[in-house]
Length: 263
Image 1 (spheres, rainbow, N blue to C red):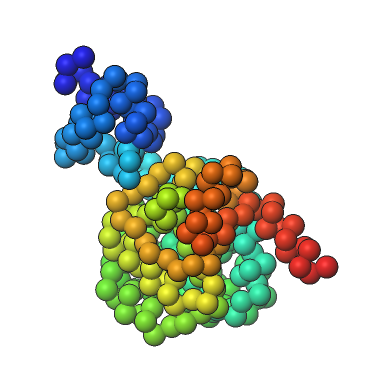
Image 2: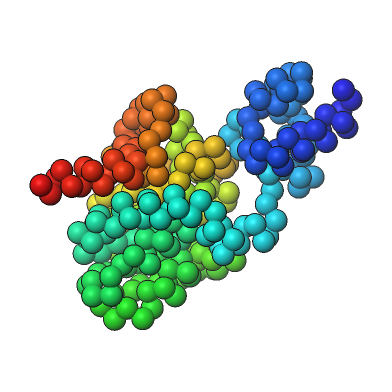
């Protein structure tokens, strides 16, 4: 297979599967790992794919990346995760809600009569909570990243340095068990780090589709982080998270644990 045809096949495979590993492409195309890596580097420069840790993902269109469209994907899983996280939010006096669709689901579950301080960089969350009089709603400023309706940048970072909250709920672009929380841009990764540093407890709300995606920019997070996902993960994945001193629980497991704790 010549170079041009191989690269076309790589793009086709990535488009069909959304995310693939270098090893998978090498096996499928009978090429060396080094050759596949060179091809991926070339294709990324051409804007045809996006490199990740150990592989690549397709480049979504602006429509696919819009918050409204992403909110409709894996909706049942996101709602289950939000339901599991709600008791954690309701036992807090102050929280940070990262921009995102799963954190947005959580925000919409907050009862109207709850007195709570909410700090967020998510435009969708700000709009959902704007008319709840009992909530002290604090907007993190900065530049609006239109693709995910999030405010990011130096202004948001400077504001965060003046706050400390009980609980932080982070969304996830990608969650690699061996690497941690990843983001497509450095400013987003850094903002998530600062959010985590401003909280006593940190939870990552991530449906299982995020485990197949890793982006270039990693957010260093402390030990003791808990990942809430919609279903139990396999033992190998769980061990990788535990090796990072993170907890990972399914929504059902988390609900059961909360019930046992309150019994």
